[in-house]
Figure (cartoon, rainbow, N blue to C red):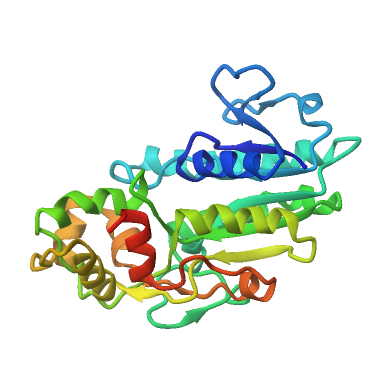
Length: 297
C-alpha cells in the first residue's frame, strides 16, 4: 500500500512509519514543516492543503494534534487542543472526499477520553460519550471525519488509551520519580487507566489499515484496564522501588488545574471489543509483562 501519515514525528508516528516501511509499504509523511523530498506539506490552522498532493494513496493514518499533557489548560491551550484536532481532521477528510481517486481507508485517531470519567463501568465502542472538555473534543474530532465516510472511504476512529513508552507520554514522565522511590498512587487510586504498549499501538494501527471488515470506533487499548493503585504497585515492582508517596487529588488539582481531573483522576475502563473481534492478537496483554518489555526490566 501507499500510505500517508500525519503526525509522523510524534511518539506514535515515529514508531508507525518504520513499522509500515518494514512491511513493504510506501510511506509518505505529511506535516507543517518544510517537507523532505516526496513528503506532503499542509497548514491545518490556515486551512491549506493541496488536494493534488493527496491523489494516489491507498490509505491514510491521521495522528496529528496538539499535545494535551503539556502546560496548564488555559483557554488558549484548550483552543489549540480542539482546533488542532477538529479543524485539521475536517480539512483532511473534506479534501480526501474531493479526490478523483480517494484512498480506501482513513484511520483517524481519537482517544478513550471520549468516554469521560465513568468509574468502574466497562466501556466498549457501543458506550455513549461522556461529559467534559475531553469528551467534547473527542466527539467533535470523530465527527470531523464524516466527509470522508460520506465519500465511501472506510473510516476507522481509533480511540487510543495511555500509550506506554520510555520515549514519551505518561510513562516517560513517571520513570524518574519512581526510580527515585518517590512514586505513589494518585488521588484515591481507584480510577481506571486504559493502557497499551507503543508496540501494540502501532501494530494495531497497521492491523486496522489492512482489515477491510473494520470501520467506525475502535478502542486501541489492552484487554485489561487497571486501577491507578494497580498500575503504581506494578510499576514499583518492575523497577524494584517503593511507592510510598501518594499525590492527593487536591494537590494534583493545585499543580495541574483542570488537566488533573481529566488526565490523572478520571476513571476510564475501556475494553478493545472491536479490535479483539477483528482478530488482532495482543503482544502484551498483561500490564507487568508490557512494562517489563517497554522498560527492559
